[in-house]
Image (cartoon, rainbow, N blue to C red; front, side, top):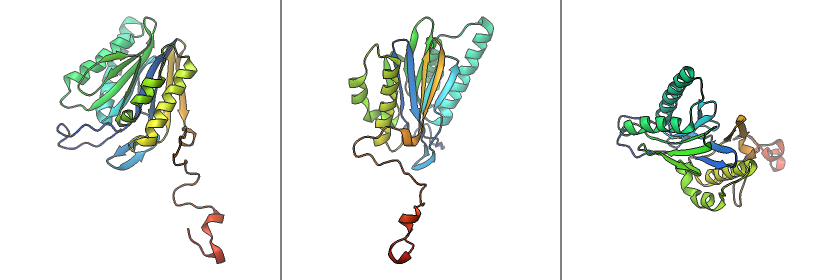
Length: 242
């Protein structure tokens, strides 16, 4: 997720540096995101939370400009809280998705936000809505967005199966994110996954050293940058080389 803003923001090319992934399964839905936040080429956060709660059973995966997507999630959550207070009922996923679409479309010349609205309700079960830049809204079985998504379309299309179990869906989301993080310089750090079903929201946090590795991947560093073990820092004759 890119957080840069300047005077030419409206005319600038969209920057959606991140990877967000979601899918439905038999009984619910799973969503996930990486943790890297950057300003240009500078990585300012490796464990950011790019998943914003809209209600107890509905969440927004955010990619694009952090301030833009944050203001959308804040406004939608505000509207839904008012609706819950008045009706005493949880909102539907489709209602939340349409509020995101409405704000996104009415401000399409000013906002750069590529988002996924994911949730569970008693009417439709687990649901995924894609809300890309420009204000479109599409209900899908699975959806991805952000700069890392360009690397994993083939994997997602090939490996997704309707009627997956919860475990299969969670593994599908985690592996898709890990593959994107391997190739996309704007995606990385940690992984956050949320599983939604009739029992509520279940959160999973994957540390950087727990992210699945693939062939030819660089291993996760075992020491902080610039820190060498005692054995490695001393060469022949006791010369310090670290």
